Image (cartoon, rainbow, N blue to C red; front, side):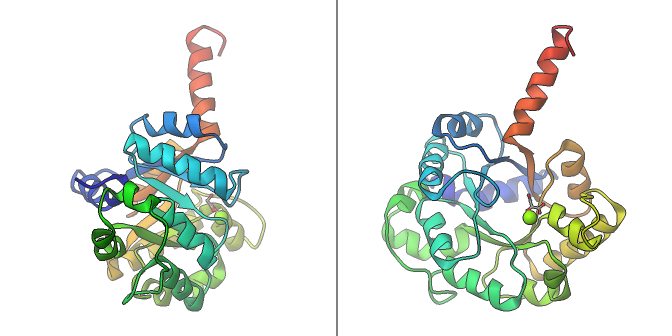
Length: 262
Ligand code: 3PY
Ligand code: MG
């Protein structure tokens, strides 16, 4: 039986067949114990955000190991689209990697090159943590990982929108992932963050359509319950739900309300 990093495709397919989104929290607080706790909460995966948090790569490696031990797939939004970081993330046992600010065909081609073994790309072989995370032998990992693990290019700038269909056509790419905060900042020329605004949703529909046309997974950061529902409705299937901070806040609010202090 495959381990968590090789279960993500099947989990996604099961969610899709059930008409439900694949939903995961977006963790920014370092901490192995908390990562493991969150991995037990019933989400489809756990994402670690290395771009906008204090989780460094050493901490991320430990957190991914803890999440994988629970049997839940881990998703890494990496610090930057750098081939060394992409390889590191997969070698540590990530099931999916999301690269921020991928704004051109060349940048997305470089991302795929770092994420996939030949003949699709040029990922470098080494490290064995990924084998435990996938629950397979080295030979099986080499044969299957290009298909089983997922690499996402983020669409969150006007530059990326300008070449959307070309980015979506990059061979070996598994999905597009919308960063609606940066996207809405770009669309409003720096005026606002409007993750559920009409203009943002309109553009996101185009991203979902582009994914559909190319057989890619349509992903996005939502952050809220309303966001998850709205994005699922317009064609997104791989959706980041609450941040870890928001999860705690929701729990605290419900608790305080229930004891009459809300
Ligand atoms: C964005 O919304 O810009 C993201 O990168 C997700 O947090
Ligand atoms: Mg962003």
